[in-house]
Every structure is written in C-alpha cells, then in structure tokens.
Picture: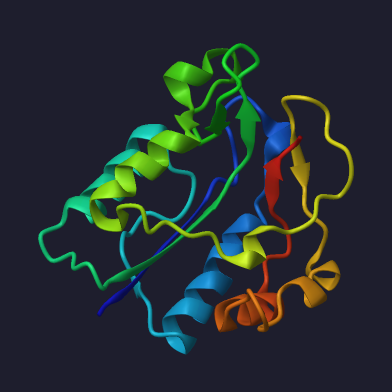
Length: 184
C-alpha cells in the first residue's frame, strides 16, 4: 500500500483580489509536513499553488490513471479554495486561479467533476475526513464563500474517538489557520 497526498491551495483568483488568501500557502506546507514526515504519505503531484482548472484536472486525472495505482493505495486530497453555487443549476463549483464568476461553467471546476476524475483510483471509496466538517464563521450570503473559524474552535470536533480518525486528531493539532467553504 502506498499513501499519496495531493495538497493544493488557490491563494488568488484572477480578477478578484478580495478573495486573495496568501496564508493558504502555509497551510499546504503544514499539511505536507504532517502527512509526509509524520504519516508517511508521498506527494502525488508537483502542483501546489494557484492551479488553473486545466492544471488541476490534468494532475488529478494523471494520478488516477497512472499504471502503478493499486486498489489498496490511499489518497488524501486537500484542496483549499473558494467555491460558489451556480444560481441557475444549483451545482457547486470550485474557483481556481483562472476562474471567472460570470462564466462558472467555462472556467471553474464542478465539484462533482473533480470526484469523477478520481473514480478510476477511488471508485466509490471516496471518504471525507471528519476534520473537513469545520464550523463556519456565521451566515453566508447566497453564492458567496464563508471563512472558517480558527482552529481553537476545532479542538473538540477533531479528536480521535468514535467516528473520528487519528488523522483528524493530528489535523486539530496542525490544522490550517484559514480555510473556506461554500455558504449555505
């Protein structure tokens, strides 16, 4: 079994300086240290910061289709970016470095499409870590992203125990300083 890590952050979205999150670069480094040195994961792609839709899709797909993939392999995908819900379709989109809010279908990445890219390697075994369900900082405006509270608010939610993994406990200790998730 090989343990793989894809850790990527979008620190800036073209044309939207109000969405800049340069601190996410540090989060990627922290995750690489935690999963690499402490948990034995290998970096699965050189992609790290500010990928375009095409770059991220190509990297994830190349990983999933690589002939050395085995069913027993593990993958942790950490993607820190803003997201929006398309007002017409209700589909969730991930905003990448080259995304344009006025053309989500053409420039952003549907969350479901990202999962589809991983299907060859993950099948139906895609799971979300409990630590990914961090509380939001309050009500969000429709169609806008919402910041997550700092890790001090996470401690009790990310400890090993029933329904939680040891990795979730480690994330509580080394957790990101900032992240985003789509509003309701």
